[in-house]
Length: 177
Ligand code: DAO
Image 1: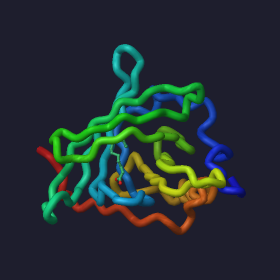
Image 2: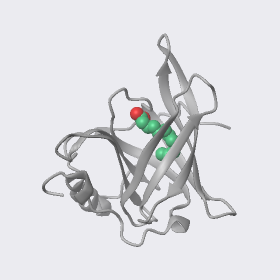
Image 3: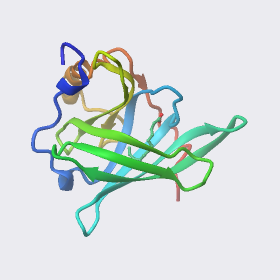
Image 4: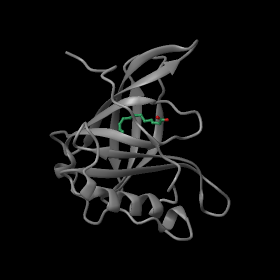
């Protein structure tokens, strides 16, 4: 949205949560205040038998006294009247990990290659976002395909966060098995 009003941010039309299932690698992130997930972030979405979307995510975090670890996170999504806008209730596998209740909007995706996520945690008095975060996801651990860069850049502009992202590294730090 040119005016950066959160209420005017366009989201994916007719979002299909079934097609969104599976593994997504975070390739870029705009951090919120008090960032949590640092890098090696991989999220896996799933639709449960009752139709509820859930996700598990892993990522490198630094907690307490500079203790570095891989956080195992779980989330449950509550549907809203817009199929691309969810409320995300999340918690960690361990009690000392972050818990929260955030917006979870799918701004854009082609389901097969890229996705742009957005969450505003705190609205400013003027309707812009005071504290938010956003993930750029790829189906491919190596990153976005060149074909998808143009779309993703346009969507970063839509959420008023162009230039605010950092690259999310995948070093294998959280690889299991
Ligand atoms: O990293 O600073 C941050 C905020 C991210 C919190 C979200 C935790 C993960 C929840 C699970 C699923 C979906 C992405």
